[in-house]
Image 1 (spheres, rainbow, N blue to C red):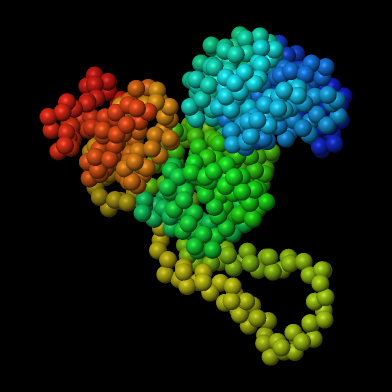
Image 2 (tube, rainbow, N blue to C red; image 1 turned 90 degrees about the vertical axis):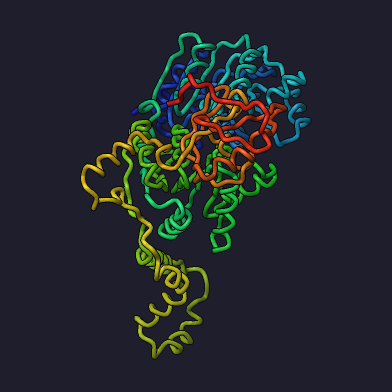
Length: 569
């Protein structure tokens, strides 16, 4: 069994981590730390969130710092404020017995004046989000010329959030660095490009298989009709009364709407999305971390970098368009060796995504039936009874009231007491679920059809040609060059058109433009809402890629079009 003592770290660091209860390094720590303490090797570490990556780079950084030099020697860049604060907090614990080592977190939403003052007083390690770091560089409030070590944490998330240019800018301002340490859960081409462009023969370590999921996560999926998605979500929450989890939606509108509906029904839940101020966001996260909230519902952008211990469930209200986003969603649970459950609510046409995900993360997904109303009531009832039996009665003078209670219940049997408790506690559940519908959908809904017809349907499902099933394809002159990725683009077009995401199909995003599939009945409404508007002082052009829907007001005007030779399929 490997120990931290065998990894070559300084004695004060070993003392700190021993006091924290660290005994045995995790696989990523065991493999990364001996390489990184040399300080001269470029490094790529691929491991899932919750596997101890912060200590894997944080302990070597502290080992390499020179306390007598009061300027930034190390720079850690991460995607979100929450992750920035978490890393800084961990470093504070690790350096408890190191004298003269100072860290500073720089991020948006906090006083830049205070951050500049702290930097000027002298720090060795700066932990930063890209936007605030660039702001400080441009104000000449931070000097990165003497930075020796640059850490890119959650590199794939930073690229998904559109920080590629920011990363390039930061790396171009750390020209005297001795090494770059890149940590990521997945290795998409964009992350590989950073490795090729800026790193010299990096040492690459993979814990588990590339793009693989956490082995302690049970991946489950439920199939229902699109219009039953909310009812399915509510039923799954009721079926898991001890759930402490995060629900992911594609858009902030959905996050807010579902949060409001569940709150009205008595659930402890709040939404986390881009419309919240930093103060509101901090308040929501504070309540969630303290478990004053049972559930948090969030968009992918808003949930970046969330690291909360003890999350039992992650629920995908819809599967993400970008399959690698699933890895980050599911990674919110089963952290630090614990187990967790990741639930996905799907409709029939999304089952092909489940197969893709199984290949991507090298894990089996379990199709599970949506519980019936009676099953939900039974689960809730026995959960309550377990709480009743395990209630601590050692604190309080309850014996004083026993004689009166015994007299009160002398003509009531034990069975009647239990029935009355059940009626008092579960009357609302029983009424709600007594005539509950079966929300499950069979994958073979047409089993009575001739076999040839079903085979044809199966082949059609595999090819997934939505244009033959009521969808048309639109072209729009917005792409990744405009700072979009799939989730942010989806949110933008739904917010602008005020349409529901259920009308959309596949989105094929390119650098300069995007093709998207949409229900034919809603194509005109989408085009009318978006075509002709401006985005970053550029006129948006949207039209049908395979024919051409034109607004009456566009008569006589030259229509934009999708190049015929560029087929996305």
